[in-house]
Length: 253
Length: 262
Image 1: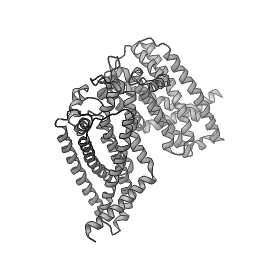
Image 2: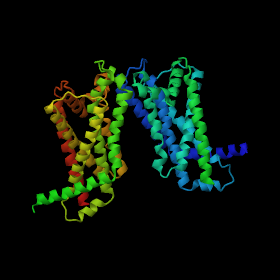
Image 3: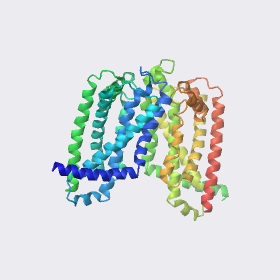
């Protein structure tokens, strides 16, 4: 069964990746917004925002990476919706393949597409002056946190992809996810925010993830943030995965 | 009945049609008002503390509300202009203009209806957004004369951007294109003195920010509302508004005539 799942997922993953390679505009569209936000915040607001950090691009890059992922997973929802509405899913169900391999192929495609997007965004950040003295293990930890975050958001994206009534509806879920990093420690220190906003900012998932990545890049002690980040990601991932599987089985039943 | 009175009657009919659209489909109006309000709340409550401290007065968030309000008012006008481009493009692509052309109505009334409708929508949006700025702590020091001047500047800017967005709506091949091209207007208040002083920007960007059309408009409104020195910003603002209005009007006229002759 496991071997069959792996084989079927690999075949379908190859198929999905071919779609991406044939229309790379989705990746380009994904990275344009985070890069535009980064340019705007570094060059327009960067000189006026006091963060206590030497370089504002270093300070805000973790938040931009999360926005990149949130922007990227909306295309996963679009792709799933497209295949649901065009009847490809039903066609695949008629084949002797493991049912869940269809979803896993989309999830893994999202992981690959987001990896490419993240590399492009980090590349632009380096051109804008981003520097990190982080060692190999720190970079590995950053990659691990981003991998887990991408996996979590991708499984969230599967739900509207399966259940939306229109393409706009499928992609709309990503707007709050893109907005959340703004109301966190991603762009400005939470100490400068008024009481209720600060309370929300300090206790929402994005802040602990941003702080973890920022501390890893800056070679600072990570503290409790990494555990909060992992707990948020794993908790949301489990809920999203179970919910997505339920919706999927209901759809194909 | 004279040609002028017929033309005015037709324009009033077209205006009624546009207002009815706004009434029946309020989602666009809500979105156009919602966008500047989201920016206002984000910049005041999330970034306001740190950006306010960087203004020099040390007034923090309270000082920053006053600083950012003119930019938010401009974003509101730009947002409404986006709505105008969308509604003009919708009319152009859905074939209703061809239908109007077969009727015995003044040809210019179609555009006039859109422009006056846009004015009303913009005025409503500005009133709502300005109300929200007062709720978040903006306290202007303007006198009666200053208020008239603020309204005058915003009116001129609305004329300029409305005609430009009508032209962009006419030029667009689809509604999607029409919803994207006026985004440049939305960007300009950010790349000016709207949200942060231009002297905090790198030299190359500062040069652009100092000489682009929206900076003198923002400085004029800020000066009038808060009593800060305006310098020659008022004349530059008027000049830009007149030039942009003329360009937008002439461009719209030629595009509409071309469309009519097809």
